[in-house]
Image 1 (cartoon, helix red, strand yellow):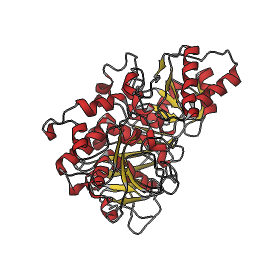
Image 2 (image 1 turned 90 degrees about the vertical axis):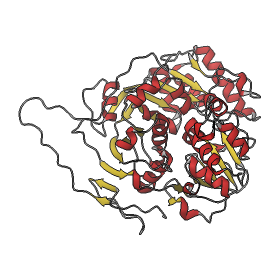
Image 3 (image 1 turned 45 degrees about the horizontal axis):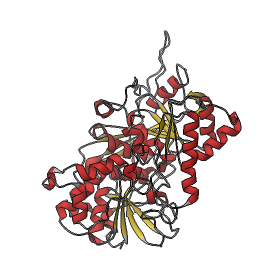
Length: 489
């Protein structure tokens, strides 16, 4: 595997040594942490990680250990138009055609994947969600009826993972399940959030609980001052490149450190979003004032934040000095095929895609717009823009950027020759029907702010996808090659 150079001065790992995967990658094993022996007399508190504490509360246990199987009560169940019909079918089969869901106010149904298409089967899926939500009086169903103009649908939101946060369904200390692997995005709010299958979701829909194995925790300590050219997407691609796509299999990935503390909620969402690309069960960031500030006005429900104990046991602890990192990409066809962006400068591309739950949030578009504005050049390849939600779309047209003399992102994108921002949805991130906006129907090369670059992920099975940050994507659009954003910032 080709990857970015890691130096012992800014990356270390405690506990087990990591295998050497390339002559250009080195990971240093620090001395093992001293474990404090338990007291011989008196009551001894069982130290737990953040994830273990949340699951202990949700299972009504005083303590949990990794590997233990427990019944966990769900605070929120989310499903969408791809998996929702299957989940509903299983629920009705197992609980009865006239059964009622366990709690109509704890189920969130969000059509977002295959929305703006003429495909009859895709449209039928949304109809199934609508009929079920009406039958069950589901409180939070974000419907869409007019596909010709998304703005004519006040209830429609867009990408589920971003909409969950914007609509106040993500709260510290809670347990959120969703029929989508990137449900782990919500871990940015200090909660346990993970993706599940239709069968499990159907069971939760009827009972409000699920049998879950408690995951052990990998802790990532990100310290140092973030360089101005680095974004959260670079950090998570760096981590996945180091531990591989199986490095966190069925483990919790806890992100802490001074760099994380300075991150916005959208940055933290990007970190947690791609925990699944490392095989993680969930990603999580401890809640703090940044979290609480974001939640103001979004929810009136009480919540209780929890944190890892000082003596908690972590499977491994990684320490990264983010100030020494450089912009990276993930080469086809795996998120762990990390390489420095500057080392891919000879890779000619055909298009750029900015969007998805990973890279379609307001701050992602702001970053791309800043770079394009500073460069003052036209893009050389088609550049597709897909806002994650209606709110993000509005921000592109309504929010002036001080760095751009008050111009909006939409104005900057137009001046640079990018495509007009599309209707909010998942769009081509996972392919979809052939008429899906920006779908790769030919074997072309794309730089994308999405989360997966497997064969066929965005459409054509021979297409090549380079995963990158919004900065790198915008820089690449200007040159027609995979590019280092530092050339323009």
